[in-house]
Image (spheres, rainbow, N blue to C red):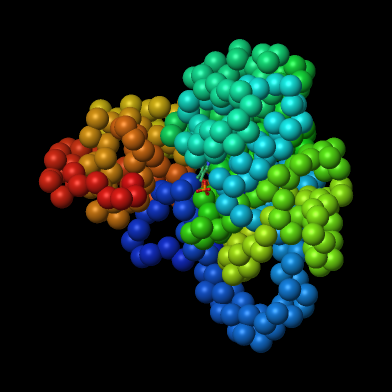
Length: 402
Ligand SMILES: *Cc1c(COP(=O)(O)O)cnc(C)c1O
């Protein structure tokens, strides 16, 4: 047994999972911490109901973008004062890429890859249309990204851990090459934050963005985060220049002046304070987690899952890298009947998800998944395959959200 500084038995007890459910989808929507209900009740009774407008000062609502941001900062290796929580990830992608483009105005190429999450690509498409200035986006295969970083590239925008395959880019190598050639780099950490240790400070990341409803367990629709390198905070253009990013929001100036030298300049407007109450208790759990422990534990559990599936579930092909260093914390298998098979598994109370065209995806999240869960999940999957239960017509119907 590996010795951990983190008590994973304790972290598991902090979540309120439905009886009998094996939840392997914390990579998509984290489960509810037990502390969420009392925290939300406290927020309603002791903050909104009683403090009303005073809460912006008395309960520090106004600066929660930053206090929560710093707590996420620790998980991604960001120094204090360089990360904030607000808005949605799609919006933060737009803001980061727009800011990056302005830093290299003579370069019109944005480099991403064809494994990136579609919304990131869509946001850049919209941004290029808006600029109407001859921009072009390149989307090579993820393996070819390194070679495609050339002197005409202005912004490299990548998601570190692929949402389908779990393959992880070499962040440091990509940044070093991009910086050497004068490009700016935007990292999407949606499948990294809370999944693997990240070192945005050590890697000298320009911009990083991510969401808090996946591995961080902040609840459905929880706000996004953005990190900007401290060296950029004097000059970075927020573009979505809302009053929360103003140097003096309550001066009600008619002209925008970004907050000098501080991450607040990337704020836009009034954030979802009720969501912050939920995110805060989720981060109370993360405050007790050592990120190296997390990676070791993830490697153990993912390794077990892969071994068991390959031994007992013929027809499923691993599409996630075998080397723990080259992947995040989810494991995916290609299977011809993946959609129906996943529906059958969900009917058996093992929750994973499906990504087109044929990917069965399983989040292996050490905070609440154990060896027993892994074995029980594979037992059920093995039976479904043996009995060909996925052929049942009830499992063929596609829901709106997969
Ligand atoms: C989950 C995810 C998103 C989702 O963006 P929202 O604005 O929160 O809907 C975007 N990008 C990546 C890489 C993701 O994994």
